[in-house]
Length: 333
Image 1 (cartoon, rainbow, N blue to C red):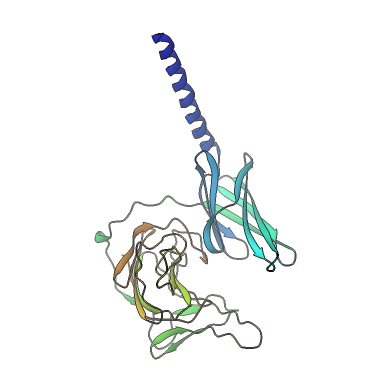
Image 2: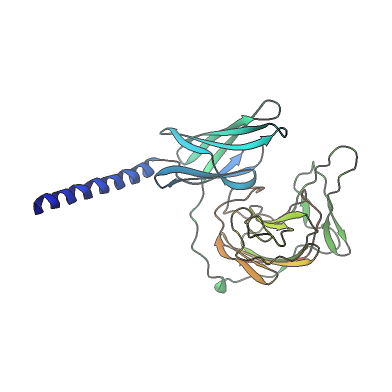
């Protein structure tokens, strides 16, 4: 009887162990596992994270703007084709809504993805081609006490927009200088065609740095400060709201503040932001709300998916009436 039990336990171990190896082999055989930066033809950046979750294939997707969101479905159509679907609800009236489905078909050649996003649009079909490349491995958390900084750079001279430029020259610039303050005032006409306001960026580009600034957000307004043109630190009137990754000081849709530190709308607020080795620290109004946390990929509105390259500071100009002052950047040596 003892030998029978021993044999049964040995057999059970082999079965369980083999199942574990099978799962690992499946993971290794799936060439799409991992994080991918997406460059979209015609402009725009995306990010795709494909992974195993409790034995099932799953993914999160960022497509140009908005948030990083779980996909509706993801599966391997064959050993070299991944299919990803994303859905959202479009309300047509109080009585009727449509489920909009966008589909990504992705193939892998070498270390590069080639894909197409397609789906319905108001008139016809939306089709966009894109290229993907693996995101580089995340560095270890930096020791910020050992970081050596260079000389501070004032990004705003309190007189005019010297050093800044409109990102899209076809759009209107809503930023102006009033009494030494950089004010964005994207006013729409009461009657007439909607005006498309643009974002502004520094002509200079930076790698790792500390950025200090003051910002004033009127009630109901929002903007954003982009680090290297890739990572958005949210600027929004979120006073009194529950903690969320879309609140003031958050790394938009990626890192939720650890505590609520924003002031009521209309008050000047201080932001102290450090970006080193793709790790972000945010001190809002003297309180540390993001503590040296990894930024896994671009946020909505990013101008590049190359997380290793230098880039500008850019300010959102199409969202609302927001003011900035005392914008000082100190680069890491």
